[in-house]
Amino acid sequence: MTSKIHIWFWMKNGRLLKAVTNCEKGTVIYYDEYDRMLIVRSGLTLIQMKKIEERLVLAGAKKCDEHQSFSYL
Image (spheres, rainbow, N blue to C red):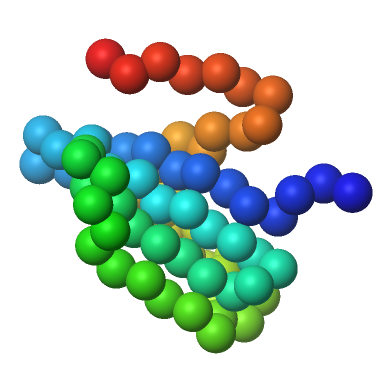
């Protein structure tokens, strides 16, 4: 069974931001470049989760899959 947890990275105003989405639980957690939690949203429906992930893509976020490695700059 594949995981429904996705990690997203993007730059905004010179800052690296991260979001962790969990479609099974209906939660989204946003972090700043120091891994400080900024926003937690829970109790979201699948439709809302899909819209949030679409907005992340529009903001230029890149999804980090479990088979994809990444390095910090």
